[in-house]
Length: 259
Image 1 (cartoon, helix red, strand yellow):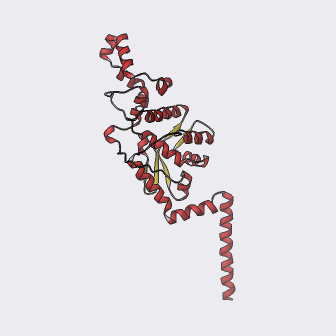
Image 2 (image 1 turned 180 degrees about the vertical axis):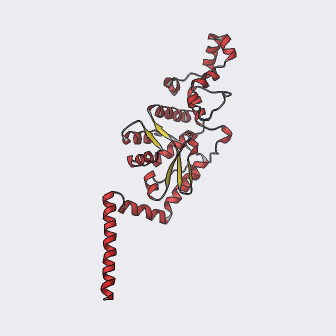
Image 3 (image 1 turned 90 degrees about the vertical axis):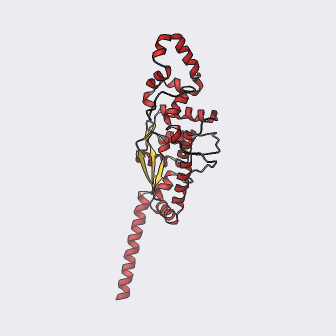
């Protein structure tokens, strides 16, 4: 089944339909090929869409399954805005990360300091599925880059294995690979060579809000304090010990003045 979804293996769906009618004329009159195809890939039909659609090929169907109905898709202004800061930097500034049960990539959301991200199950099949949909969106100008948008933002959020650690700890990233370097490499290389001139409006607004949250003076200071004084258990212990020593010295000074 995996081979059927690869973009380089695609045959126009109408050609397969013609062959289906020729091979099984009586059967094809009662059960259409698109219905059979929906049954075959029902585990990928996350929005439970009905088989009343015309598709170009199987990769096109895969993208169709991943996205909401066309009338529910956000507009795409001619601007492109990305997060300026990694997941770890945002977390240090006070952003909370939560996983949402939905597997729809358009369910990325930031509200009241909480960034909600769909579950990302990084198994071998997921990487191949994502790469083929990204390739389709790049090759076909009729396909808006909704799927691509999500993975470009994810690429900006994940710069190091520390970011993968954080997302994994929050239940957002599930790895079949034991090594975080592998997941980091996959995320950072999914979008290589991708060109774009527009972006999902909801994502533009989300990125603006994330950047503004981090750049608030108090949030920036909080991130700086965490990085400089609480970035490791040893540094945290040293900082706390220094604070205690400072307080004791201050108390001793006050008592000396009183005497």
